[in-house]
Length: 132
Image (cartoon, rainbow, N blue to C red):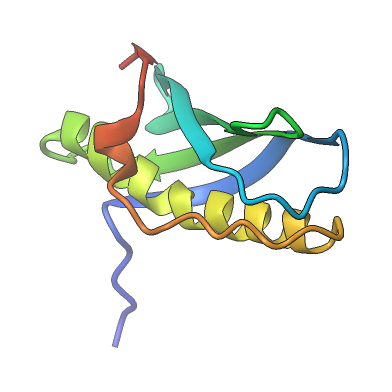
């Protein structure tokens, strides 16, 4: 039986930027602020789509700053219907678990309590979408 290939799929992803800045070790509870920005583009004549998500996390006592940029390269079938839905909804939903796992691991290995981002609808939370 032939394996069915999805019409829209993640080909690869890379973490292009990873910065963690811890100014002091503090046992004070602080409130985290998380923001997402994206840059998306369909790559002409290739049936490919590139999505970059820039994630920033800061705390309210200004002792922690995290910035992670992930880029995912997706491919899709030429007959894919409703491409825009896949670009705006599916692609962010596919990349978000990688961001979430990376930030949890980064913080845990940095000697601070791990930051575990909640599962969320990232497509609805993206602050700015440039391109597609």
